[in-house]
Image 1 (spheres, rainbow over the protein chains, first blue to last red):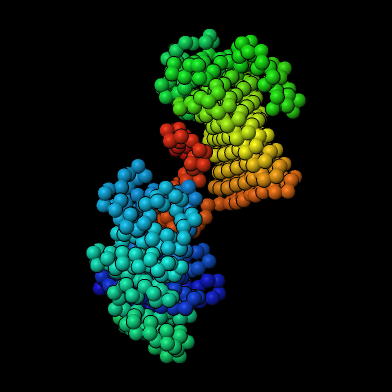
Image 2: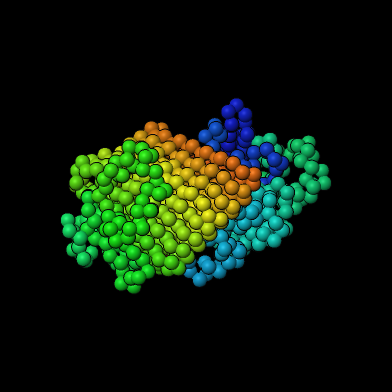
Amino acid sequence: MDILEVKDLTVRVKDKTVLDNISFGLKAKESHILFGPNGSGKTTLINALMGTLSSEQKIVSGKILFSGEDITGKGVDERSKLGIFVGFQNPPEITGVKLADLLKLCLGKNVKYRFSEEETKLIEAFKLTDFLNRDVNVGFSGGERKRAEVLQMILLKPRLFLLDEPDSGVDVESLRLVANEIQRYIESAESSALIVTHKGDILEYIKAKHACVLLEGVLHCFANPKKIYEDIKNSGYEACVRCQEVGTEKW
Amino acid sequence: MNEEDELTKIPHEILEEAARAGMSSDEKRRSGTFYLIDQSTIYSKVNETFKGKIELMDTKIALQKYPWLKEYMWRVVDREKDEFTKKAASDFNGGYFMRILPNVEVTFPLQSCLMITEDNLEQRVHNIIIAEEGSKAYIISSCVQHYRASKASHIGISEFYIKKNAMLNFTMIHNWSEQTIVRPRSAALVEDDGTFVSNYICLRPVKDVQMYPEAFCNGANSKVSFNNILYGNKNSLLDIGSKAVLNEKGSKAEMISRAIARERSKMIVRGLIDGNSQECKGHLECRGLLIDDESLIKSIPELIARKKGAEITHEAAVGKISEKEILYLMTRKLSRDQAVSLIIRGFMDVGIMGLTQPLSEQVDRIVDMSRNAS
């Protein structure tokens, strides 16, 4: 059984259809790559899956099942507790909330908790030790934000995680660090992943067999990530549109 | 009440009430302790280790002891300013005189408590604080109303003198009650290389507080910070401002206010930085969180530049808690209530106040207590 199943999902913002009747499944313990140009609906899809759609974005039809359970109407925190995680492309700055406290909450502890030796080492590996007493994301660079997102993910131990462009706005060193940690987590936790990428830089590090392209709210071309990436690089997303190999559940 | 010689002789319930506003009954952790209840000073004592380093006594006694102190009375606060200063000038109940002697660094904070226990009382105090050259000290001043008294008013005059190279960090915590009117009138004079940090915390409901403390940075490289953490609830009206006049080269001012309004409370947060010298610098920051539709937050920043090279800036944002921040925290397994609570708690971050670690933790606990009680 797929860990996540999306059936005939349509999302609208006011009168505009952003996701148009899409269906797909994510396999357990495997990584999936979602390509798509800016404005194709990738972030909306992630938000629909996590329940973080804004008040203007509405699911007008369709269902989302997680481990067979219908989560379409469930709240964000409920989905999080079921084991779904999202790493945001642009996580918000939260003034006054220290990164250390947020990490402790991710571990299910309260703010008085002291990190174990292992956790301290992990924080060091993410080069975030100096950021523990700083406000979450306030004044963080792109790479620092992504490192903090992925560290939170590892502490939350999700069964499925959704990462929105973990490779955009990141320096090369941070990308390598973050991507290697993501791959290590996938292998050790036997977790499933849906990774959205615009540029494809992360493919160098993530072992994924499945990929597809989101164009104007419709999924195309379920295939091998490297093949799709090569095609996009050579012919651009326009070629994908012309190709029109629209399909469902082809992974 | 007569002046007591030991803190333990003060009724337990009074100490307990004072503790909620930051007073410690462990005198070993304080350099000096002062209690004025209703209209008289009942306790003022300097910790043995700090004798000869600091002075602490009732202002009236100090005026008798030191004729020169007259020079400091009504020097930075104008006695003709308004009806409240005029009242205090005509007659007052006492107050504290604190003096940190030259080059003394006071490791433990000085603490003072001004308490009202009688109904319908009008308390008038006049405090004078002198940080002599090269001294460094932290003061925590708690203004408390005993639960027995429901209705009262407090007029508090405070004059601060920060001499050359001195640093004074003054934290005032207010715990009044829903029918009390509060009118502090304070001003500070900061000399060359002096630093004055004035922190104000008001978390409990109060009928009406209006204050606009001023600091005159008259010395080269003198600095002032005004930091406010304001939690308006249950119909409170808080009109809190601060004014800094930068009169000398290299003088600096920083003002940070965090205001939360709920339950029909009204908050006006003012700030004025007057850049009256070359190479002076000032920054004003006000952030307000509105929790419901019945309350109001108004931010009124004023910046004045009178000399070329004055660099005065401000930023302000008032509004509701960002939905994006709430949702973000909910993706980390927090419920909506937990997320809102964490954001509010973070918003009231005492880290802005430049306190020592133990004092910061203590003030943190007070913030938590008030938040849980509301």
